[in-house]
Length: 146
Image 1 (tube, helix red, strand yellow):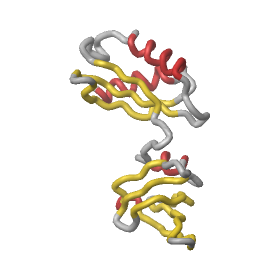
Image 2: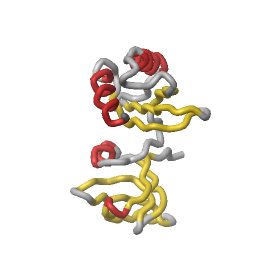
Image 3: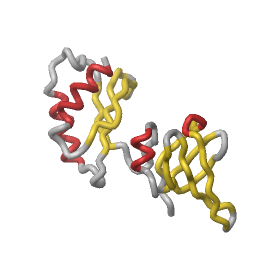
Image 4: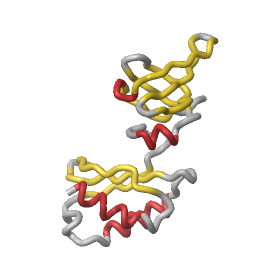
């Protein structure tokens, strides 16, 4: 159901100022539901835009989403996960949190080449660089630097 729905949502999202990030089935307040995440390169997504998108989703007939499903639409947020090459490319120059076989901690993503990334991080007061194979990364997300 979710894969078919993604294609339909991609048609709907074309009329909105953001892109579809992820759709997955979940439990929301003890009920079956769908969490629909959107993202924008143009900065924060306002609640009015999310509300219009949600309304368009509710107008779909029951063949797409069963009536008993709860639908939650939200933006990915500041600490969005990096799940594919496109996400890594968008995060170049950004501060990230990373867990891999070779590194765990906060760093700046410098570049991605094929299936490797280069990060820059501080060890005490020294700036160091490290190249990490993406396949060894178990967690990667954007991070906020204070």
